[in-house]
Structure formats: C-alpha cells, structure tokens
Amino acid sequence: MSEFSTYLQDILAPLASSPVKEAMTYSLMNGGKRVRPQLLFDALEAYGFPVELGYPMASAIEMIHTYSLIHDDLPAMDDDDLRRGKPSCHKAFDEATAILAGDGLLTYAFQVALASDVKDEQKVCLIEQLSKYAGCDGMILGQSLDLQAEQRTTSTLEQILEIDRYKTGQLLILPLVSAAILADRKEDLGTWIKIGTNIGIQFQIIDDILDATSTEEEMGKSLSDARNDKATIVSLLGIDQAKMLAKQYKDEIDRELAGLNLKDQKLRATIDALLDRKK
Ligand code: GRG
Picture (tube, rainbow, N blue to C red):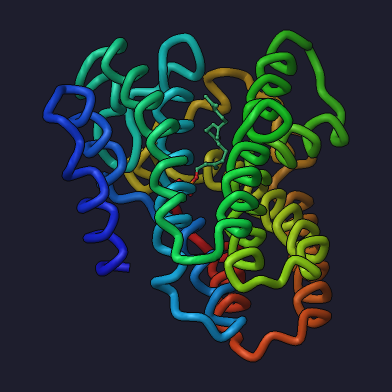
C-alpha cells in the first residue's frame, strides 16, 4: 500500500497549484483505509496479474470514494466535522473549496483511469463501469434514496438494504468488476457483482455497528447516525441481530468465492478483515 500511496500522490502532482488542489490532496492522502484499492489488487492477483496493472483504476475509484466523503460531510448533507481523524475538507478549507475539491477528484478520476495499461476496448469498458457504479444509477442513487429516507418517519429492512446496496455497495462492486475487466475475464462479471453487493451490505452493517458502539476518536470520523436519527440495520434490528445478518452475508460471499476457483486466497483474508474491523 505504501507504493500505491506514492502513486496516488504523484497523480496529483502535475495539477496546477491552487487551494482546490491542496484540498484534493488533503482529503485523498488523509489516511483512508484504502479498502476499495485493496479489493481490486487482491482480485487482480487472484487472476495472476501484478497489482501495478490496477494502480490507475484503483486510484480513480479511491478518488471517487474520497469525493463522495467530502460532499457527504458538507452542511447540506450530513454536516460532519471529522473525517479520517482530521477536520473534514470544508472545515480544513471552506465550503466552496470543498465542493470544488470533490468535483476535481470526480472529474480527474476518469483521466486517471485511462492510464490503465490494457487494450482500448478494455479501457472503454472500465470508463463505462466507473460512470455507471458512481453515477445516478449507482452510488448517487444511493445517496438520493438516503435523503428520501430522512423524510420518512420509519423505514423497512428492505428499504434500508436497498439504500446500502447502492450507497455503499456500488463502490465495493466496482473494484472487483474492474479487476475482471483488466484481467480480460468478462465472463466472471456476474459473480463479482453478487460478491461485491454482499460485501457492500456486510460492510455497511459493520459500519452501523461501529457507529453505535465506538467513539469518534476510535473511528476518526463524526458518528452522526444517532444525532441524525438515521434508520439503519442496527437501529431496526439491534446489534446482536445485525451481527448475525452480517455473518449470513459473509457465508454467502464465501460460497460465491468458492465458485470462482481462485488460486490466491488473499482476497478472502481481506474480506474476513472487513468483518472484524474496528474502524
Ligand atoms: C455522492 C455526495 C455523494 C455521496 C454518496 C458514499 C456516500 C454516498 C456517502 C459517504 C458516507 C457513507 C456513510 C458512505 C457509506 C459507505 C462508507 C461506510 C464509507 C466509508 O468508507 P471507508 O470506511 O472510509 O472505507 P475510509 O475513510 O477508510 O476510506
């Protein structure tokens, strides 16, 4: 990961100096867990390819993830002051600069993805997936469903799962789908979509449990679910049942992974670690 961190830093270096570039660098290099790049690298290695082949696409996904966090923290959204253990982008800079930093990361991501060292038709496919999973039928739809849920007094488990499938799941499917495209294994896309969807829900359940049981210091981010009276799987089912549900998703992921017959088991270990994570 430290080599990938240097790669990420170098990507931003050629951009013109400006407060927006500073804010983009601040948020991107601010100690995220890099879960999405790790999933992409592990899936790529499982196909027998070097992780470096995935650097441009992993960077693009991490940039889009970071933009979503910057915008999600804004006063018009969750209004959170702490992210990745530091003041959120709009607190460290100002609101207008944070909006532009998010916009900058989103748009630059597409240029960065084009540096992938694969055939042109694979690049076209990667760009299409980047737009699809991050966009209005993907992560942005999830955020929109989340905003609509805030207007309701109650949400059903199915409604919450649908929000999680989009808001969290889409950017966790994307690295796996990207690895299959980079490895020229489009026939595996359906299985990766199922695995990524289940990872997304499992990831969000753990996030909700940590939101309810950890401190902001431990998590390095504002814990605003209770403050915002947000309906989550934990608020609906309680912690014990939520843990059981996460385990069911984990078992399903294991079954799907077994069907792929991957040589390298690093991906399995990464997914296990997501279930046991503390932040
Ligand atoms: C398009 C504005 C906009 C938002 C999209 C992704 C998102 C919706 C909002 C971000 C907040 C949120 C609760 C997202 C759900 C996914 C999630 C738990 C993100 C945090 O991901 P981690 O834990 O973060 O991988 P780090 O900081 O480690 O990268």
